Image (spheres, rainbow, N blue to C red):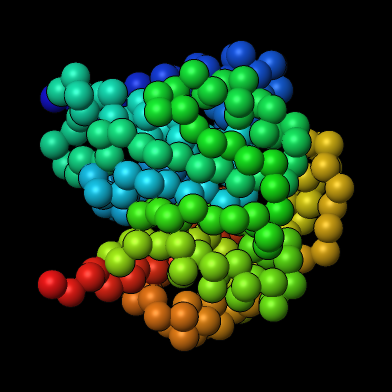
Length: 246
């Protein structure tokens, strides 16, 4: 049985290796993102992805690292190489990624298009793209790119797409933490330029406002600080729907 650190090193290596097929930039970005962003390891260590979360919708999916990570996790579990302290993740995932940037979609398709079942990676606007029925929705650091009404519209449609007992993992910046929020916005704009994308205006909310919105839509919500090792004000909101009653 692997230790958690050894398991994470293997996950990092195997989940990023396919991105060599997407080009030098895609591979280095994947390695840096998976290695430094605490959300990905946090999903596993904090029991946020369960075995029944088989239908995964990734909004603002970028290079679809979530799909690669969960695919490698399933393979490691099948081989018996999984830390005792980590819960089982889905044995197979039905993955849909929605990403606005064509270059990121192309990199994702080049890297993980071979997975089975074949991932669906759509170049589309999250505000209008059809959302498939799902058990888990992942939205990391993208809702601030649309205005407040559009944010609520996306979340209402997510609520409709999620099955009873489904879960939304939503990472946002807490606008109440002024310094961290400003730093995170500056870094976000800088990375956007480096990736060759146009920098758009952003719209923030406080943690209390995000929580109230999700509760109004019918979610039970708890928050997890998600800025470890960074100067940011990021928070992961874990929003659950009640399971169906017999």
